[in-house]
Image (cartoon, one colour):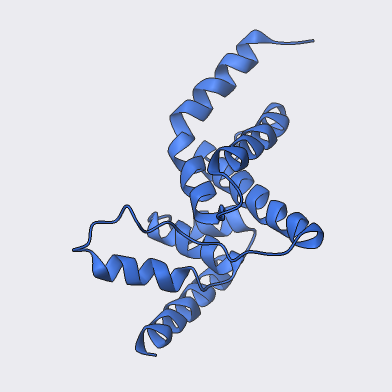
Length: 159
């Protein structure tokens, strides 16, 4: 049976957290894939999972997890059926005086999908425990991977 209260609660939750969804989608959308299409895919997956959300984690953590998994799964699926295009973060909106930020995003674009997810969450100042919960990794593994990613980015910036 259709429940209007459930739909209203869901829409309120999406509106309240749309920044998270757009951030993840923008991070993963490539030139051929519009942000709005991928955004709709994430919202559809959130809607499918919403009735079973038990509140054992923060809503934002749950949204990050579904958003990241949707984007990664989408690109794994599309990789099998069509040729793959590198995922690119659009840095054209960053002011010219922020050359260090542009360089950072250029280097992040060279990372793998999981590494990008970890960096996205780290840059969003999520604690390691929450990053672990979102990605399904252990806290120790998150810390190790982030340290390796930092070293990798430093090495890439020196090249």
